[in-house]
Length: 181
Image 1 (tube, one colour):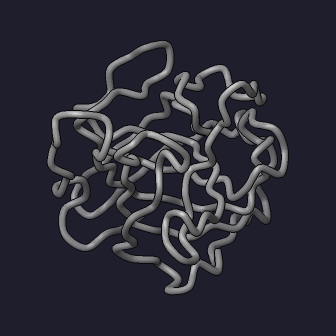
Image 2 (cartoon, helix red, strand yellow):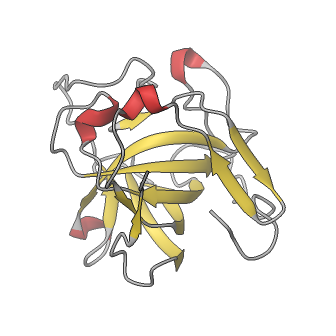
C-alpha cells in the first residue's frame, strides 16, 4: 500500500489501559473467504491488516507486539452499535469455541496474529503473505484502507469497532484491485 507521508510515522497515543485504547491500521479488505486462513467459512469480510496499538499485546503464543507495526487477519462485520453502517472485528460470544487459526492470540475476536514479514518504509506498507497460506489467489479482489479502531470502554460486545476511516483507495470500498497472474 502506498500512503501519503511516511508509512507508520503517525501512531495512536497510549491511554494506559486496554479499555478505551486505540488501534491504527493499514487494511486490505479482500474477497477471500474467512476459511482461507483458518476461520470457519463465510464469517464476514476477511481483511489483512497491519496495526499499531501501544496499550496491549495480541501476538500469537503470548508474544509481545505493542511496540511495533504488525500483521493480522481480521474478520469484519457490520454492527450499528459501532455507528450507523459501521464495521467491527467480529466478536466471539462467551461460551462459544469457533474454529480459529493456530496463531489466534486468544482474544474474543476473529483475529489471527501471523508472523509475516512486514515492512514500513518511505511511503509504502508491505506484507509478504506466503502463497501456501491462502492457496490460489488469481481473481481475488482487494482494496486499501487506512483506519482507526477503538476498544470498547466497557469491554463488551462490540469489543473492537472501526471508529474512523482516514482514506479508502477506491473511495467506495468496491474492492477494485484484482490479483492476476
